[in-house]
Image (cartoon, rainbow, N blue to C red):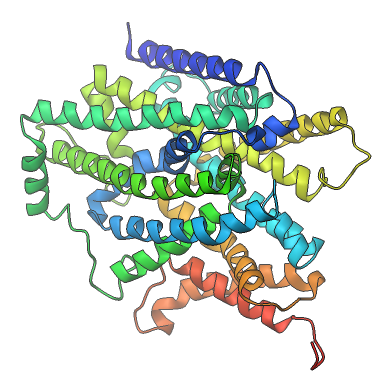
Length: 494
């Protein structure tokens, strides 16, 4: 059997397994409550485990290991910051969401400021998730296209259409109730693929994990702490940025919070988030170790050449697929299964969350009593298909622009789009002021523009200091200050 046929068979078998899970989870209940809230019956430990796969995605699967080549293990301080952010989510945001009994978390902005603020928050989430998740999915489609479909002369858009159609079909009926369980399957395959690849490489090189890490340390690939304050990955910046990235990209993200809100109780949701935070540390250590193994293999194997771009720089995103392809057999199967799992996990929950946000923050399913359950289901399905088509357009349109590590592009997108959400929620939670609701979109648009200009000229303006992941925090701060400027005037008694 040829390599292409093996890969295609793995893809088909895994997809069939997903549809079986979909059938099991949606056969008894497939109404709106199951689609949007999972009937509020999701076991917390299942959500906690599944959230790992949803957080990792294909970008982590390839870019984090590949990023070790230039960045060593300096990604870890960012992960330590994630733990701080998860505790803020567990004890500040989740109690609020459960108290208000929210389905879409942006309904809070309507209650706090007004409908324009609600729609502003929802639009920024839709923009961020549509772009971010579609690019994660693009990476998976791109890799499988390079491994299989390119040699068959199949156009890039065909596998893209196939992937989106599959995700649409298995989320169409069960929604969140299905996604919670498929995420557990996808997390398992992601982790198994990473661990199995490390084991095969160690066996091929005839070394142990301690020997690998020792050799990688001697070559500078296991350095964790970047102490240069002007460096974008200065460890203090990484820790602080990691905390706020998690607060914004998980705590203020409908996709991630919708899964948490499907737990039976607030206490279950909190246990889920805290458990996920510590598991996330262990999982990222696995992926960084995978990166060390891949680089050691690539630099110590006779005849193997690292993938390089036109500028001569090693392309981190292509290290793993190239090594998997060169080793063939079991390693290639592990890589393909991991990539397929990553692709599905980064898209299925997002597609469900985008549908939920539009239905609740724009169509107002929770307020329009004149809409019957049947009408809501019909509208929900139309919205679901619409977002799937937008997803496909982003994936196809991005193809000519893929020339950098996607993890950097994704964090840039998050910095610009989640920053206004961070500022809005901080203002709502930590002040009692009202704002002129109609002016909120203006503040939310101006803030990312200012941040973009500051990022471009940061080295000149701040004596060599370069803005990195802390762009998100700066964006939130500027949004907060902008809201102060448009707060409603009150009299002295108030």
